[in-house]
Image 1 (cartoon, one colour):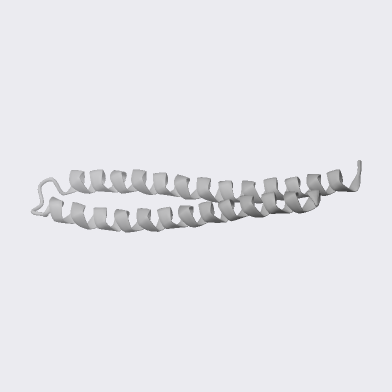
Image 2: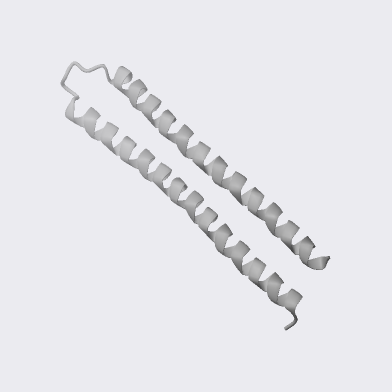
Length: 103
């Protein structure tokens, strides 16, 4: 294997490793978002069940919970966007490094 091919292979391995880390981060955030939604719904159902005979303003509580959920999801989406930006930059750097090898 010549030097150029060896360097290309090293670059490719590094790129793949970094891309896997980014993809794993995005997947983890998506899993946490889904867990949050499920747990939020489960808690709300339990709350409604246990307070059926109480004078509780369910709508007001639901709005507050939805505000919390919206805030959480917005932050999660910001994190995903940042990871996607890192992935895009990684792609650019990889392409640039490959072009440098061709010189």
